[in-house]
Amino acid sequence: DGMSTDTKKITMLGLGAMGAAVARSWLSAGYELTVWNRTASRAEPLAAEGAKAAASAAEAVAASPLVVVCLLDDASVEEALADADLTGKDLVNLTTGTPEQARARAAWAAGRGAARYLDGGIMAVPPMIGVPESGGYVFYSGSGELFEEAQKALSVPAGARYVGEDPGSAALHDVALLSAMTGMFAGVSHAFALMRGTDVPPSGFAALLVEWLTAMAGYTHGVAAQLESGDYTLGVTSNLAMMVQGNATLLRTAEERGVSAELITPFTALMERRLADGHPDEGTTGVIDLLRS
Ligand code: FVH
Image (cartoon, rainbow, N blue to C red):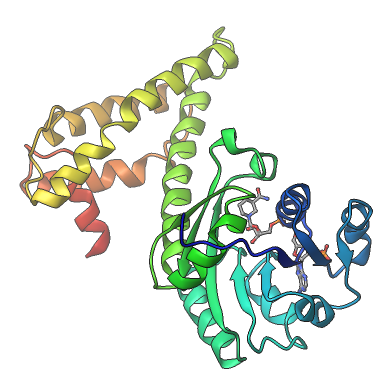
């Protein structure tokens, strides 16, 4: 990162579970850190470790050119910064929000005189922060210039991945990955429910699940190849006609076991619709088009 300079002075607003972990990683790396939290007592441990605890958000913002916020939600960012002078400040917003919220927050910051804005989507939980081998990282979008300048500092808490000038891009990446995870855990929950009441210990079954899901995850690249070629039959190993038949067995087994199929029926219903539309030789990629229409 030859272009990046090391921003040494940082202000951190929000010392919840995530904000405190991020702040602590900068302190440990020798950054000059000013912190603020609505509930002041949460700043005390960090102050004891060398951070300067500001009496107000406005005072904290005034202390550094780079201001990082990690608060509960988008509304709390507006509330926390209500009395702060953002003129000339670089703002990095690590608060989880939607792409539209991120775009609006970037415009709001510019309207308040902020110099540059980056939005961040954190792909990590607090124990992964400051632990490079954890694989945690943050998507950043917005000012590419600010990202380059602050990259060294931004890479301290977790890996920093820039995904474009659109301030909403980081949030979109974040939410897309979290949404995929939601579907995965829906499937995991259904699988455990099926196995409940058998003599298979959950720990043993978990090992099988992780092995299987890891093997299946690779097929995501096949979906991408089909989307990019426009040929949804490309490289199909399990076709929709076969899978829809198989789904009947999944649903019947759920019924036999007294398990609600409500977590899996939305997906099986879409597969049926795509098959009924005349696509027996595809995999599941056509479902994506059904979702967007
Ligand atoms: N923790 C996690 O696992 C996830 C991982 C992925 C990213 N998320 C997002 O990070 C943001 C902060 O999450 P957090 O874990 O730090 O959350 P809390 O521990 O609940 O702390 C919330 C902080 O927000 C402050 N706050 C709330 N409302 C206001 C407000 N109106 N004005 C000023 N500050 C506010 C709160 O202050 P206090 O309750 O201590 O006074 C905490 O500092 C979040 O977007 C996650 O989605 C974390």
